[in-house]
Length: 297
Image (tube, rainbow, N blue to C red; front, side, top):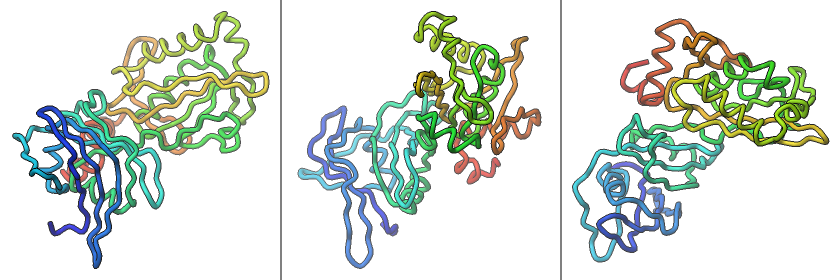
């Protein structure tokens, strides 16, 4: 291979259905340097063969491994953290448009230098997204950071329903985001204890929020926002973490009409320009990098 980087699979055994292997990343310069990415990784055989035939992976096996007929496959990178190294999950599905909804196999918590990671994304034609990047679980930390492109506060649920949906749709269409209920715009934690009392039970309260989000978004958010109760002193706060969706997400107004929202700085903005909506749709289907390479954006 002409490339400087290579994935290496040292196969321990395989069946007709799956392959078990140690997964390495090898850098070739004056002296080859090999780093273990995953010990005893397991992949369905057709995905393993796809990596092998993609030209980014080499194989070491005794007796020699015999690959099966290559089947279509799509690869997605769920980025967990960024820096000089990238921590990510490598996800596999039979078709690109079903990648996040119907992931068949995952190699979790792989780590590569940032430039090497970008090289593999390009060579695999992979789609990347920030799955956990930007998640803030602690309401106190959120108030210290203040509202920004990834954090928004609402005083409550019952009187802020339309704003909640607008924010969730914006995060799903733009970037991962954290929505907190029980915090004022100024960052003061007031809590939602009174609303929990109205529902009589914390579980019923969380279920009501969940059901409202399901009813007022289309299509169904995938992955669905993570909703949890956090206690700060004697006050409860709802933390909602929204991941970027793999499809264009719309909110539904009181008449059932759809609208599109994106995040711009610390504001959720309704988009009406059909061209801009089309760009968002293409990015969700193919990923921004592939869309740019195809000249669609």
